[in-house]
Image 1 (cartoon, rainbow, N blue to C red):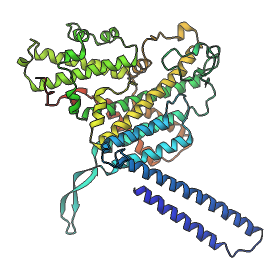
Image 2 (image 1 turned 90 degrees about the vertical axis):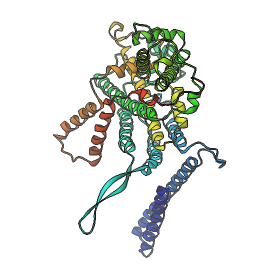
Image 3 (image 1 turned 120 degrees about the vertical axis):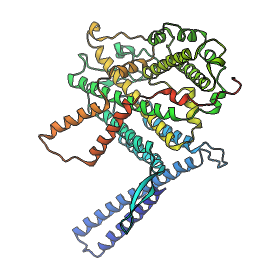
Image 4 (image 1 turned 30 degrees about the horizontal axis):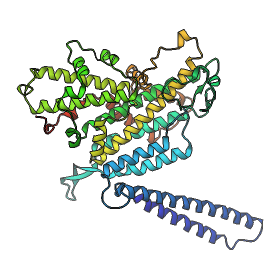
Length: 497
């Protein structure tokens, strides 16, 4: 609400300035100069009044948004609303859905949408400025002696990740801006005939997306190079967002309700056929995935849910019981081996299908999470991950349309139409290991430095801050995150002994 008070004060100040300026011109001569002066005054008054109305509208919007957060989305005020963490998470998710929508075309955001996104995200993220921790510090007394005191500082995870996420956010939006003035490809309407679409007709499940059209001889080399650069940039943004999201999901506690809903054992969760494949003496995770039916998003998500449930069951039993308690003759070493195998499968699924909806475990964690800071970081990174994946898909649509204009043997890559599009985005994630986010942005900085040799410019504080955040992002990408760290609680499911 501090921002609302500042806006109200700014409005009063503008009104006072108008009245003072108008009063100082009341005694001017009635000539042409006087008429021009009065016209300019009226224009200034109109501009100030419009600005005042805008500030009041923004203040009303802010009041409504924070009222919903305080009420936990229960507008009746009966106290049956959700937790503050979930309300804030839902607010960020809903804002992203209303601003970005489907993002069906590879084009810049409109000025209004961009301004709304930055303004309302600043409101929601302002909550994290007041989530602090006590840290030791030194204070010098008047007599020259030092005294150790405790001071408040923004919580470390927020201090590191919020600027990093803002940088990723800015990179995605700026990347879309590079397609502002392009004229080489365009989109057909949804109602276009098959003859107009030609070879570019969509054959996947996203039939409602517009069809991309490129010139008959394909894109220019400059356009292709820009597409490749933006694809590599978005790939690195996607990696970083996925790493941050996975980290904070792993730190969230598994709710009791999820534990109570688990099957009796890992075999019951996986099913006999999957269990047999995982426990076989010779195990190849790639071959395992190729043997599974992954023809739809629903089937992939079902497999992910089964694997996560089995991991939770096995991990908790291993913390509670010794090898004699299994009753199946399977040693503890083999149990650990099976657990490692399903962890590998889970890792491959998450990277090959980055656009998947949330699993049952993730939804349960987010719903029952009480930490507001973690809720903000998880939801912000999740919507950036979703946006990056969408932008990646739109870039691949254009690249595919360009490839279809070339000779089929050279350009038309083999593609299994039975698999969702997200698998190809996942393959790009795994194949683009030669260039990290830091490398990509260092390359961009080097390009700017080469241009600056002919036209020197001063380095702004914003560039300095971005470079610091990029160093932190590189640390996040290279950090190994074990998904099982969060699954090692000490409580077994009740009635599962």
